[in-house]
Image (tube, rainbow, N blue to C red):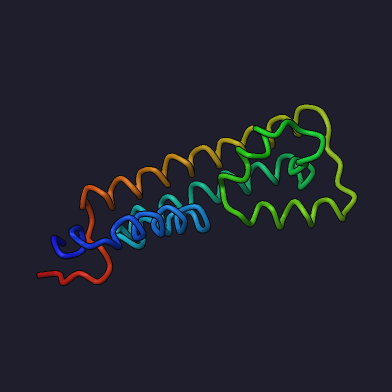
Length: 138
């Protein structure tokens, strides 16, 4: 552990952990070998986001008619939200009223929860909690 922490690449490793945790929820924890935590985070964040899409349909992914901070909250879940948004723009999806509001709230909460998990993965990698990939178990 000491050899990795003393290297110049440690900051790059922290950035990779953070980026991986954003691209795939839980992947940052997987990189530091916190496997159970990674699975729990992935299932929770993705489940919450999919539940929001189920309640409000793909129409809740509307970057043009919503405020920027709403779409930014959704994008914190994963960059795949951008691809889903492009797909939703091409289709004729509509939802209004309470299902739209509830679905929007679920998808934003999924993004904000993933932001907490990203910061947790980077913090755990920084403090040395968990085992870093490439380390010996001895």
